[in-house]
Image 1 (cartoon, rainbow, N blue to C red):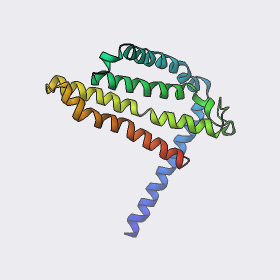
Image 2: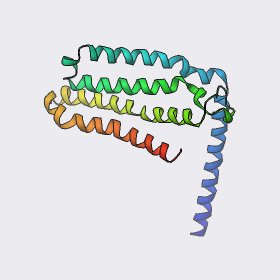
Image 3: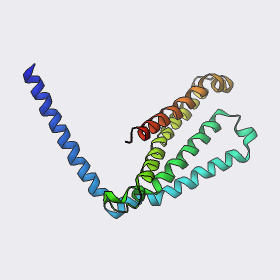
Image 4: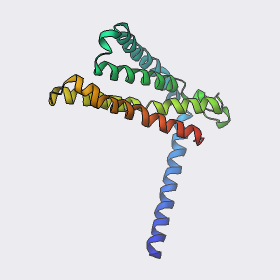
Length: 175
C-alpha cells in the first residue's frame, strides 16, 4: 500500500507539473495579439447570424413558435448571442492586474464574461436537442405533439438548467 501511495503521489506530481506547463503555454498564447483577437473578429458574425434566426422566428411567431423545432432553434440562438457577446470582448474583460494582452477590465467584467461563457454551454445541449427532435420525428415517426408535451420540456430543462446552475455556482464560489 505504501509503495502504491508513493507512486500515486509521484503521478499526481507529474500531472500537476504538466498542467502548470500547459497553463504557462496558454498564458503565452493569450498574450499574443492574433490569438486574443480571433473571437473579437468572429463574435460579431455569430451574433449577426443568430440574431437573424431570432428575428425570423419572432416575425412569424404565431406559426413558428408552435413548432418544437423553432422553439429549440430560438433558444439555441439566444444562448449563442449571449455567448458570442462574451467571447467578443476576448481578453479585454479580464482584470488589468493580470498583465495579459488587452486586459482592461476588472473583477466584475471578468465574472460577467465567465458567467455568459458558461451559460453558452447550453448551445451544444440545444444542438443535441435539435438532433434528438429530428431523430424522433424522422426515424421513429413520433408525432410532434407527443414530442412537444413529453420530451421537449425535459430538453429545455437540461439545456438551460445545467449551464445556468454551473454558472451561478461559479459566481457564488468566486471561481
